[in-house]
Length: 249
Ligand code: 6PG
Image 1 (cartoon, protein in one colour):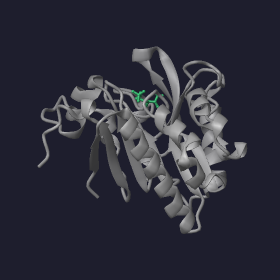
Image 2: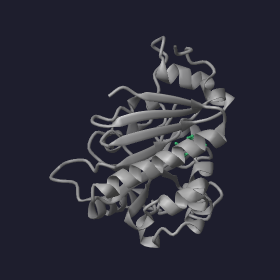
Image 3: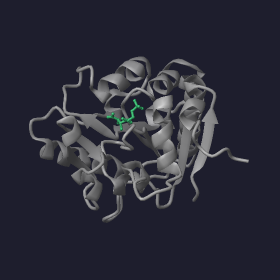
């Protein structure tokens, strides 16, 4: 399936479209009599979309009781730390949405034992999603961002997690940031029914062009490893982020 690219005037328009897509995907899933399983990234770009989901008409349409949210990745900080992805999602959405508390599955990346935290999170995914046999869990929707170095999730350039082909969740040492992260791996991301990148800002324009339209051997980035095997890949971009992309006819 070829990736779909949509460009929006600004972050507000992008966020409205992304919230609409979340509601559509959830409605489609629940109409097929399945719970809606989605994995959410952190950072700052998705904050507006999360807030719209929780506080506008979207909230009235969204099937909160049939939804389970998981995290794509988490920093190794407490859940109330300013850098916590969970804290951002909680403040933007969970504190204002009628999602049953047990339906948000938090990565416990504050644990001193990250290997156990990764194992426990994979077990929590398995307990909830019951993938058949040795299959990877198939999320209905995974929302990703793009870092200026071409990372996505906590899959950073040159890090060990890029080579993971079996485990669902791993600790990942990020030397450039002198830190560890917990992250979903490529096999899980690429098993999803749908993956949506949200990318905003002038600062992302160069890396976005090199990720989506590579021109040289140097144009190799972790975000390029996202290629859902049997799923739809979408890029929701603001004009500022998309300004270096070839003009499409
Ligand atoms: C994180 C995120 C990360 C994020 C990118 C882009 O933990 O930081 O999960 O992968 O999506 O860094 O972040 P922005 O969208 O805020 O630029």
